[in-house]
Length: 320
Image (cartoon, rainbow, N blue to C red; front, top):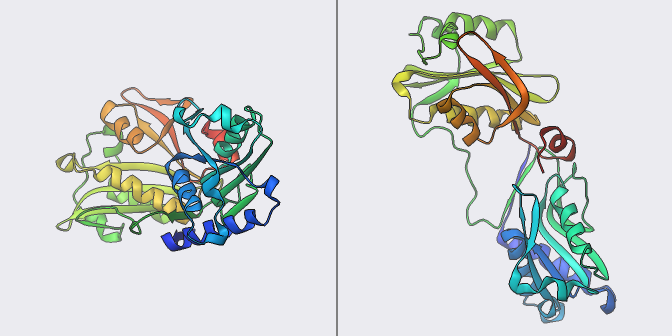
């Protein structure tokens, strides 16, 4: 996994090159309408329109149509003030997006624009993942499916796990530590000795312990599976430390490890209990239909979260 950061000057440089390449085309083939997707697409269009070099200025004469995509309803909408139908019909259109991950959004944008009968549609994205189902006609940076790219930011984001305390791999000394009482009977049955045994017996398994003042307050154990994902086996937080977002941060750490290990998604069996499920749903996990395990006193539901978005995974998880 690689993380790329594009500075504002680099982004402007990409827009300068885009302007130059389009300027080299015949004037009647040059875009006359810019369709920008989302806030970051709007910002890229702004940089393209406001290029300082006089010899490269042409985009300022284009009409701009702002376009938004609602991932919940899977619907595109044009800004009503931009008069999309009138300006797109018969025009040469350049669709601008900041990043193409799965490619589904860009593909639907093309379909949405083509429905208005333009003369021609060209696509551009600053960042494209190799796994995309649509490769734009023009793009800046090509990255692998597991990589990340940051741009149009004033600062580089740090990874963050815990505000205090210590997160570390489980050690043999933990066998004698006080047991974690998380309030869930089936999880409480697994003490430190059992966790250490499982850790030694399966080299795919990882267990991390969160402690404060040298006292373990929680742990997470997960396995790297052969089909490109991580399975979180257990997340346990002692009742005395509830409410401190320890569980959510342990999950975040497992997701970070999953991305670093080039996994595509994380799966877990979530206890069907309101307070527990709220944590998982809040962290972006979706229920897998008709996948439950029922025990006399507890029910668990299978949940998934995509770490990498591409066409194959989106179809599997029913995500666009």
